Length: 227
Image 1 (tube, one colour):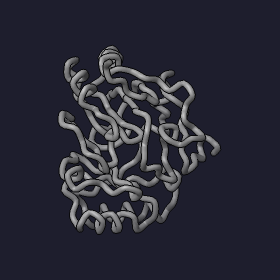
Image 2: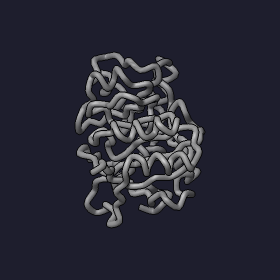
Image 3: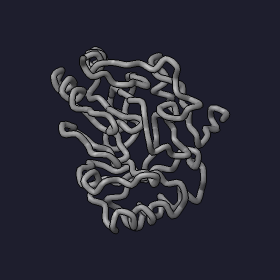
Image 4: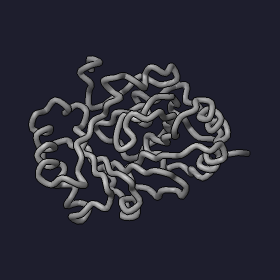
């Protein structure tokens, strides 16, 4: 019996964050996350109140065929926390159709071999592995309070290994002047590897234009959607 993956959603959009911002991408969002952040913006991957009743199970070959049909520049495997799954078969299937493969992970679990790009977004509930931080092409720090960047720098031993460390305001704090000033001050004072970040796809509502995507379920709240 071939391995099947629990799939929360798949959709064609463009990458809304990081170095690859604005590039056409096909997203595979896998179900399941043991980290469970209180402000999670994809709570339907784990929160019992939002877990979809029509959860899909798909083989690696099915997902690769769907991705290939969308003709993206690359595929993003995300979650939830995708690295709680054995991604070996999915990586092989996507490589077989010649698609570059990007990963979005907390870094708290081992990362399989074969990704073309790795984004680590560390979470306090389960700290990233040292090998994940070393493997990261970019890091996305979620800035919940003005002192979040300093706390994370201390947590990783005083030095980031990635060339790009994005400072993203936690989405419910995106209009908090103190949070935004902290990000701006750090970039202006320190510079590289820090970069000011934003989830650009959200004001565009780019992901939701694909009917395969699910409505957002952010636990931290979303003023634009009224919750």
